[in-house]
Length: 212
Image (cartoon, rainbow, N blue to C red; front, side, top):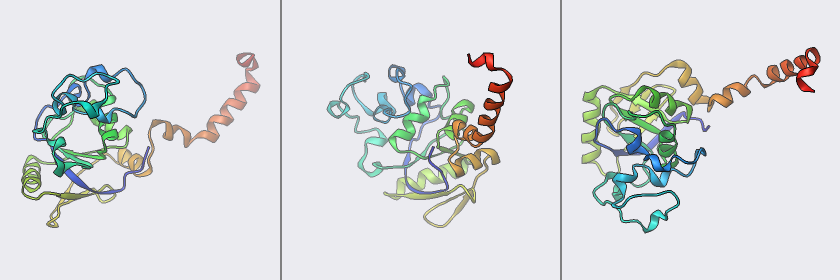
């Protein structure tokens, strides 16, 4: 998992509440357990005018020009601005996989569904919760300023607007440490690789029948 320390990125505004995981990545695309390849089908039912299916060439599909992520000014965005209860619905981990594969490293919203929130941290995405007034201000800022970029500093736990206004946010210290160091669940286990190997060697001696 890539480390997350500081990010200065273009912001895309998704002004919708209660965005569920089936909207983030529709169910027909959940056949793979690889973490990559889901980006082209992120928000599939909103980005395209036809019905998406696995294996289709998305470059030949008709785009919904009204959807925010299809607008040229938001191409290459790394920060997604949203409303409350983002990531609700079923607990599919494919949702953060799709967001990450599309290029998003940070999400800023009023609230996130619990399981989705946890899955973001496990996959290298920083979900930031800010008060509704701050979110309103950011939506207005992005609308009024094409190419609006924000600085997200996880070390200092700050979002910095282009006008210099600082928006502090809170994050669990353990999750923060994992993101700063790029530790997913496997990475956390591998920190103890020497102890794991020593345990296995000792068990091989004490209980050889397990290895027969």
